[in-house]
Image (cartoon, rainbow, N blue to C red; front, side, top):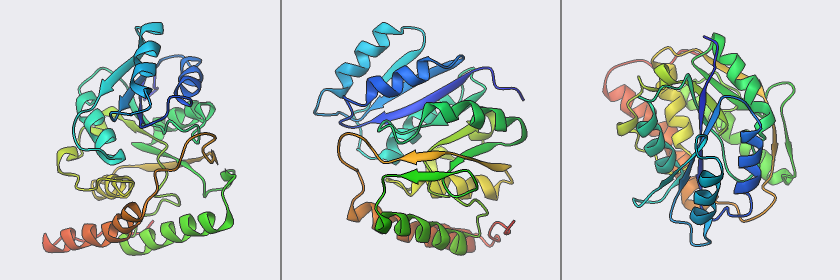
Length: 246
């Protein structure tokens, strides 16, 4: 499948300074529609998003969420609203400029041979800029831990920069995903592997946010620790094996 059109979901919470920059990068790419999902940002990000949509009426859309907050919930709500729309691909990208739009064409091209493509920091050619060594170690050990527990084959199970074939994403039980925070990334990938989806990775350079504050919290870390075991326990209760290592 050659990707001719893609919807890029960009959740926001207090990203008014970063949002115009990420929008400009995406609007420079052909065939891209941007869906901004604002989580009731108190800093006026929603107003900035609406202004961008007026500036690009055919290419930028805004969803103002009023439900429970959380990165996972924002992405999942937007995915559920988008899986029946006529796009070839649905992509995920953070609004804090850590995910560079220049990598997007490479991820989309890889969908010709895959159902989901991960923008990976941990394969040859990938990297991280401006993270302290403790954060680097936490991320690497988290991925080793997730892979050991779930037997997922991807090197970067926690990357939030991803592109899905729309038809493949539509086959996942999005309404039943339980994770609220960043661990939804692991849960979606696990569900994809269970269904035999072709999972590929392409290198990206991840850059620590330039403005604003990280959304990482103790609650998010705890959920990330518990989620792999919850997924395995749920599968064991149904009497089905874990995804085989690749």
